[in-house]
Image (cartoon, rainbow, N blue to C red; front, side):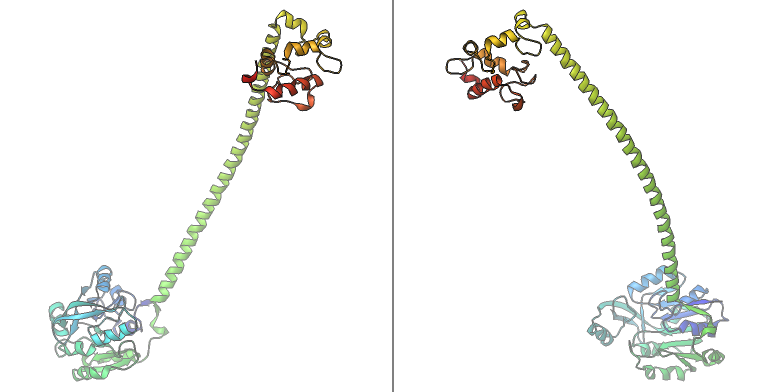
Length: 405
């Protein structure tokens, strides 16, 4: 059956090959870091194994407590003596350490470092307090950024014997071997070297020496595993495909909605056209009614004219021919009698004539369109007759009522 490898250097693949026949085994992960990425124990947790995760970094401890609830997740550190020590948290990385010197190399490289106080136990004390009597620990993994020797010195290797021990064997963030300081301890207590993967060294207890055969070859296609990074990429691809499908559906819905809106818009435009036509008809009716009203008013006004006006003036307001000949020369210029009637000697119009000329009810002087009157309101210059122009020229000189006698 294909399984997922979470470890950074296939450590879990090699351990699974050696321990594939163990059902629901037990592990101790010293320096567990994240609960999934680069985890040596995540594969086994998914297979039903349970164990202890040692992680003093508060960030990763919180993630472990959340995602690995079946394990014992302890926020402490291991060394060769118990007590309280300063732990240097190097950001959200796996490089945090109890060593001030190692932390200084990381801060020199530009990384941030935060100091916290943590409880420190020995491996022997941890085993005594948290591993039930008679419980087998199938593998112990140690990755404590340069202090692996301190952890190994703190163990009771004669009494507490994990089947396989995996120890990071290079100096932090380098390929420089560091196993010479602590390997003699394991060899002296009945552990034989089994495998070197370029980062870690694997040791098998003498009483389980048959497991060494599993380390005869590096991870390969016959181990039938896939990388966690590959699974993440495939999951991201599936999520993107799902999101794309959702977006396609949403786009189709938007296109459909747009079609409905376009149709509604066309309907509204059509209705607006109908309403505009109705409005035009209403305006025409209103204008017709106003015209009829004006016509009726004009007819009423004509019917109500006094007898002398009916005798002297036509319905259009033009004087009859006899009056025109009596008051105006054939050229259109007013005769003296007319001037004496409507004008003073100085040429200014008399009050009555002035008020008559500016009254909007007066139809027109000869040659002026009905409704157009003196004082410059709606005058049609081109339609004035000589006699109209004669009086306009004189009345324009004295337009203010306060100057009219």
